[in-house]
Image (tube, rainbow, N blue to C red):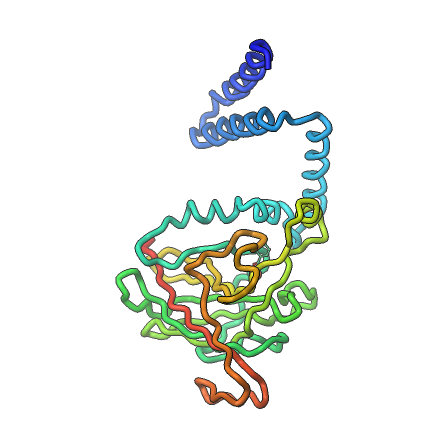
Length: 290
Ligand code: BEZ
Ligand code: FE
């Protein structure tokens, strides 16, 4: 590149950065100026062609067009670039033995029906029964009584209840931990499923040879007064997708043994599962201070 070319490109970046100098809100100034620097650095690094710029605009337009109240393709785009996970990582700073956070995903529904401790969240969703138990404590090991625990997961066919569009509530529930911080419930053994991939983000994954599959997981949102709200999942040890989760949500510390229990194995609460095999998992949750 000639010196003159270099000078023109640099000068343009500086002029755009300077255009935000008068932003009254210092945080907005920082965000717009840093974004300008990084966007220009990207375009200059890859020597972005005009045709590629057009294509990118077309792609982002398609992402916007498919987005509505039920489908959030922009978040999906952030997810597959790992930006959602990076933002979560930045904002849930490592603290002693506190449980790690991961992506919330598009299928959380606030205020799911209350399920008593030991109850079944499956609501008839197809899948193998899974007994889930654990405790909620703070980072000093003190039990957190009556923590609010929301759990949700996909069924064996790879769908969340909200994807059926018929208002059913299944594989989702809200629990309240006991006075000793303990919780237990029946769910279904998590299985892998794809993120929505019939839109522009799916096309991007296809064109880049990436899979839309998420590693099998069970979502948790845990809230208790004075403690940092935790949004996380647990993953299934041995799942072949642990290293290629499409939204980079897997953390080693969140992988759990879902122990297979052959049909006929007595259940923890005496429930009769007939000739069905089941599984069990333990997840002890540690909440960081606020
Ligand atoms: C999920 O785990 O539900 C999910 C997360 C990110 C994108 C799509 C789905
Ligand atoms: Fe999920």
